[in-house]
Image 1 (cartoon, helix red, strand yellow):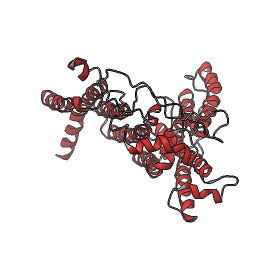
Image 2: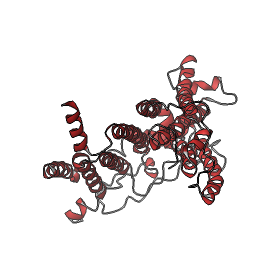
Image 3: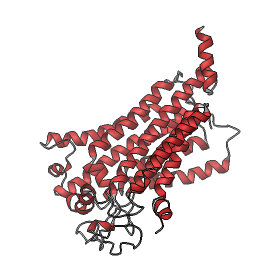
Image 4: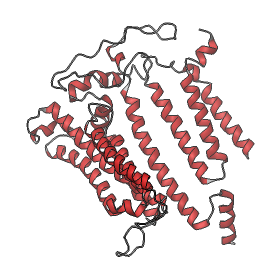
Length: 154
Length: 250
């Protein structure tokens, strides 16, 4: 595969997460409106979540739920055979296929499930602080708030 | 200022992109993250050790139970923070009657919500209770349950929804959720095992062995998570949409 396709097409998930992260970071730094800053923070968190989830992807694997047959867990059914075909020409190292290759990696999913929860919590607290600021200063623009604080001090 | 921050952002981005070629390609089953012995262990041993086919739920509630407990506490303290930042409403006991004849209310919207909300709540309970056999769990089901109350608050107005689930009840439910989760851990400790080491619970649960006890304890833990998540979701909406005054529609 040509080097450009190897860098961009085979690793497109990293490009997406970096671009999303740059958008979020830019919004957090430059935006004057506090709500827009919070939106930037949310985009930033989403970028990190996408990055982690994309590391758990396995070609040819299914969701990390083991099929336990009709009798609902009373007797363990053999896991489906591991993905036998490791796709050619994608830059994979052709080691022997492992039994766990049939299921996607559950660990990033678990970590990001909790990260989403933290995202909701920080967003909720941030919004409540912004509302309190609005009640106090009647504006969400950062420069107007700063000016307001300076004039009330002097 | 904008140019300076653009330079900072582009520098950070290019720094991250400069090492992209060192990362494993998309979908490689033998990348360091996927070939990690811990991930291998979770995939290969979980069903044998816990009897739970949904690996994500098993890792969430059992192997990484301590992490999830404090995740629930994070939600709980976020709710507490919002409640204390926006303040308790100063309202007399008597005037908690919702405005029944609000001209902005729409008959079609309300009747649709009457039909949809019970189904939403039933589905939420299914997602919670079946979370260790199919996709789902306490966080997901809790969010669905909380959003059903939020839907009612959007369709009618906030006081009507708060009549069903007042902010006082919200906090009690949130506390109960954390208490259920931590309580299961403490029971394990009282029986002589480590905190949140569920397999010892088969002394208390009838007709279970050490493996099924872990599965059942996970259900209990998920229910605790769902209590906290659903009530805090609705509490966050109730406080943020009304600036802490608990009144008015959308």
